[in-house]
Image (cartoon, rainbow, N blue to C red; front, side, top):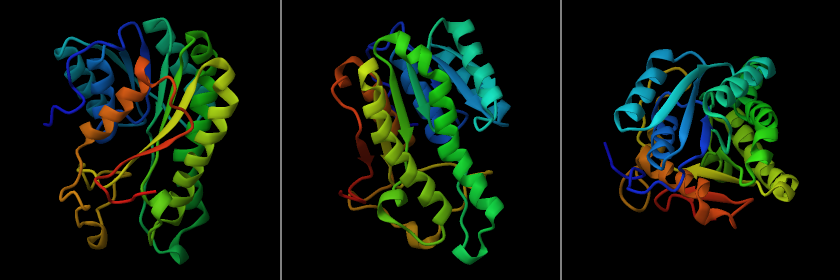
Length: 257
């Protein structure tokens, strides 16, 4: 595994981060990177208990602090319980990473309203519910951070992903809105947008990569989850307090806004 995002330094010591969808892939890399920076991390998953436990074990083996909370992040009561558990375990919340998502592939005419709502809810509703639930603690932090994990197709477009693109585009817009709404509380809000990233495919919510999106970006390779995580860690740290309202792309040149 790449060591990107696992560099020395404990700039997040004393901080607490909540990472939704933290059981595998980019979410796991983010949780590990924040823990490597010194933060205590609550790893959320909806159903992937075993993989979430693996993420925590990796963090603890490296000398970090972490715990798992299983919750559906579209359910306000479940999220409230998760936030309460995080504060009970670790004392505070300084950073929220909205990473959980369901991604599906289908021609537009085959997308059902149920599919549409499921994807929109998993990405956009979940970010709303989690941010609102964490807000009192982020305010109390005095230097709170919200990171939304966007999607390249939400900026560039693609076929077969109307629901995902609508949700990820909405997340980018929500980032700008919250950056302004929460600035008086010294809370930064940014959207990290991964490009084509190596990930474990064939799992629920992780569709197989279509052939037309399999080609590497101009830099000549697909990215690693740890490279996305490194950007998230930087944005959660003390050197990024003047960065807010931005969509920051980590994509090897695959899209240049």
